[in-house]
Length: 205
Image (cartoon, rainbow, N blue to C red; front, side, top):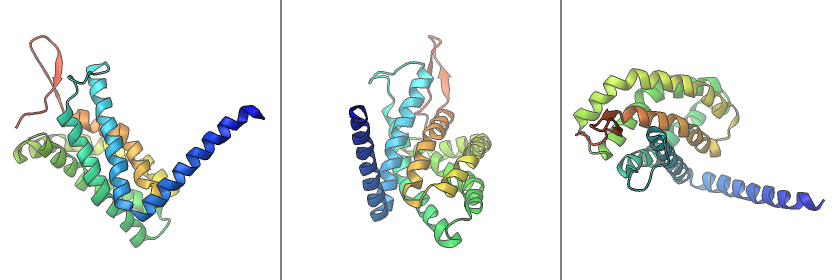
């Protein structure tokens, strides 16, 4: 049928791109994880800023330093330690055992490594002192950890149960779109100004 030809062409194109991604991820796992996470978290923070402003923000309204902080976290953390942990889970625990991997990642790695790293990396890039971001981490750690556990428990069951290693960071990064948008909102509280509007409180050192 003629009508199905464009659809077949489109599906063929996406399958080819998927296979290229898989091949590149297998050849360069850390670089692929870094680029995938950086791009998705860049989009997550821009989205969070638009939601906070309740409109599509203009270039001048866009807080580039805040977006750079979240993008850097994706590039550095997901492309480095996080990918390393995921490879080690498979190496130490073997293929399968998805519940053990989920438990370690969500209930140990996330609250005690990922969240402190998030505040440290993003806070430093935003120009906050160590005292400032560490104090904010202590104040917000329980909420951030509890929300992360609720969100990531089912997500990581799917990730470790069904998603192959080469695409796991990409899958997690897509899930991180919502999670990191929320963390970005949580770690960038709003303050009132005279006009009664709200602006992100980003640059308190």
